[in-house]
Length: 124
Image (tube, rainbow, N blue to C red; front, top):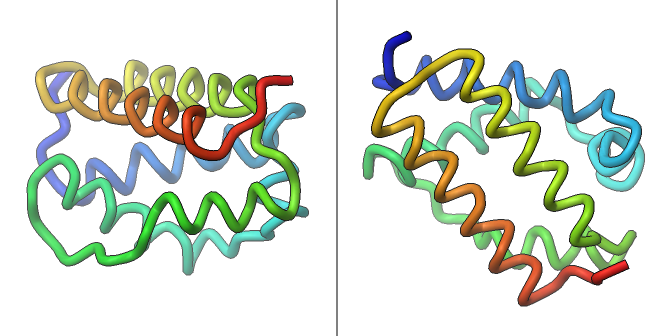
């Protein structure tokens, strides 16, 4: 398997990830009911974030923590929900890609989830 190399690769990962996440019994409702996302609108934004995160390209300027704090005020984001998010994302990456950038995406996702656990999530 090849490594993540382009924005199109990142799009592929997150298209597949959201298909799993939105139908997941534990976290799907965050994407479909709590803050219903239109994937056509949301996907370019999340790809901007990860393209900047992985390749230092693009111009993502939103506050990731503030966005998730807003969601948490609507419905508590739990440690379990974040663990499932990480697991689904890791699984998606592992199915599609392998290499240094793939490993960095997974490490950075775990770091983001850890920060969210410390800053906003509830342990329940």
